[in-house]
Length: 106
Length: 252
Image 1 (tube, rainbow over the protein chains, first blue to last red):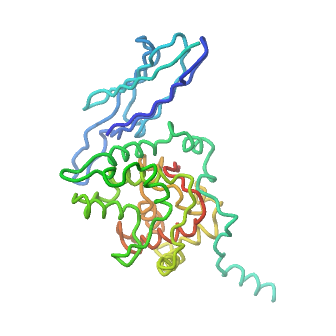
Image 2 (cartoon, each protein chain N blue to C red):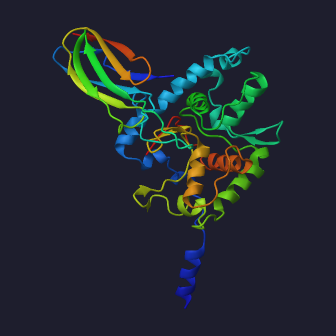
């Protein structure tokens, strides 16, 4: 049950800096902990976050084991053209999660 | 001599319950940043649990109806429900909380195994149901049948316990607004459960919060679902009567 919440402005003026906010549910298990039987708990983190604007990469982040569960990532980009912003979280053991949002630039 | 006696009387007398118009939700004691996180549904990590709960609401256990199969749209059927919980249950002759009601529904009507306390599933479905009552005034514990259990909860709230020999009231009635180490002591109104605690990095129930508090005064925490724990939940909800529900709240 991975849930992602994305906040991209629906409309923007050409050349305007827009803020994109993202939140995803993820345990971000560090790999440094042990369970009650002393067995190591395997690492399970999102290690890469990429944002593409009409296919072009505009933001990338590498995530590490010290980052809290349910990472909240925000960034700014410049509104250039109407189109699609595609956000991808790549994680350790499961398929990447992708969400898209449309933006209209006037 | 007289003044000495008066000082003695003041210092030993219990501060009374917080007057109704001085009550403040835990939200008021947080930083602006955490308040902003709670207010924005796309930044509030508690909403992730609400979304999980929405999926569970529509998901039928094998051979049974989903929650939605009987209750339909939660936005209408569950509106105001969480504001009444814990509520008196006829069959058990005592109050039960929202988590217990959900698990009774699962075992009795869906013939599915109960969710374990404090699992992602139970917190998610509870958060989803409680979210439908956001903004509505709390009414739990105001009926006649709940009264003895509210009183039992009040007694527990005022009872000193643990190695530190502290009652809930000594912090949350007498010293709210002051600091315990670096943290502000709130008034302990359970207005936003299940809530997302940044410290927990997850959504958790009121029972989890109570157990942490009891552990903090170095007493033995009550078990999940213990009747005394539900009485305490009921008293706290009654104490917050009229205050708006905020689920899912964010707390530091």
